[in-house]
Image (cartoon, rainbow, N blue to C red):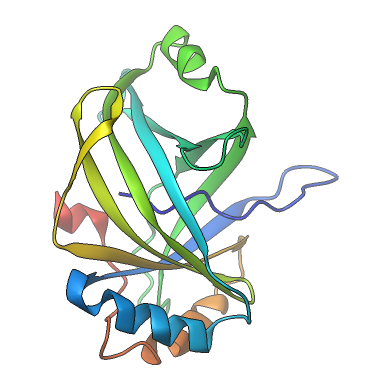
Length: 208
């Protein structure tokens, strides 16, 4: 499950290969307020953003062993906000000197007929969910605390239930390729959140 759309960066004079650096963890419902209080003290001097998003994951099966995956997300609490299309590459876990998971990341705003376009291209929806939570910022770091809700009737985002009794916590930075030193700042920030939450470099393949 992924966090809300990453921050956008203007690109001029060609394409910049953007990489997402990510640490993840979770906190039980009863510890949420303590974590939010800690984040308010550590992050930039502003109230955190709140969000309610509907995400759909689309697959395109071809000759390759694994399908091509795209994610679409729309805001449910901000009418008129653009849809987002997101591609996440394979995580790079091999370099032990990196303190965070690193993967290629493309995030673009689109019109509201995005899902129709993907279906016409041959994609099929694999699953969908609703995410509700808070977004904090510390410089170029983004900290997202959110709960995932299962959609009980396909397409009906009013009929949902919590997937678990905990909140996901994700610390991320999106930066041009080659800026691996940003993971040092992430590790330092993550240390300040202990013992409320332990943010780790998690290999998604271990969860399958």
